[in-house]
Length: 506
Image (cartoon, rainbow, N blue to C red; front, side, top):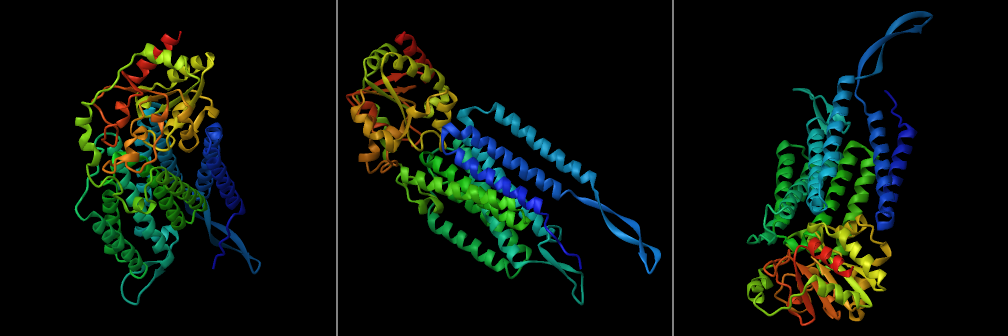
């Protein structure tokens, strides 16, 4: 019998990687420390990958050696540790190919497409968990999670440990849900599917039935490792991921991205138990827990139920206020020019800028900072108001403003800035639609009813940049703010309009 020992340096390396991941999350909690957080995360992942490769390089070959038995030299077979270079090169080639794809994608992707890129990455994490689970099920002896049983009659077969079956079943289920759900999220964010909810009849009963079936099959899998059970768990999990995300409307998509991030973490953690890899367990648990906490915070910000997010279909139950968009567009509204906006802001004591997805599409963050700098030169106090779900994913606006070197002490979240609007001379809204809609506080038929919004209508004057009056926000509803007496619409491309304002400011 061979005694298996764990190299203490491996455990120490994984511990260091885990500490780096924890510090990375801490750094990412603030724009001022986010770069350091990213670097620590990269260092931790590099340590984990190198350690795993160094301790799991495929071995091959045996060798003979001479040993002394009763004073005589005899030949004995000794298992060697020669590297299987063919397998090692295949692994390195796969890593290199993935690195090239990741680097090229990251360099070419626009910030406006970042949400769908994140959704695509989540789908890959989920698919990886499923493939690892399938590999472990088909060849459990190679993963060290089974015992070889030799019956009196018939061929030997591997019996997977019951604990490993639980880990494998849950890992595959969560991974499959993450994959199919992330694919739907990607299609919605990328415009390949409409942003409106697709409401299936009896979807809640259907979802609960399938989830109960998956959990029941996972429990059965611990007693019987029959192939039909494993593959049924996999297929049902792919289906429920699709069914959970399809009913969710575009306005709720930031929460979906955050929730899928959490799912991908739990899938990785479950597969970490199957592989016996401490780094995967730590990383997956950190991602899963942080994603769940962020989802809870965002649900609170949108006045949504956290439980209903997990169940799926928590978006609008009907068209709601969206049906009134055409009629509302016939109401009177005021149009202004860049010169009007420049004059009003230059005469103000305080201007609060509210960025949204329209700013991201126009890539107007840099010229927006230039406008703010000119206003500050004239003695105007400038602040930025960020709604938790502005854009298409958590932190989207914060990243764009940081890219433009906007001072962090000028950026405020909803709960910190809302009370300031009543004392604000000018609220400058650039491409933020649903998160400034007062109907969320008054119109019970609106799909965004109950969602906390930025109280920009309380400012002395609201300047609202929008391409045209014909479009609506991502939730598909018209914005009551457009028709208020203190609102002036600036209809143009966001970047072009801000550039004209900058020129007018001199």
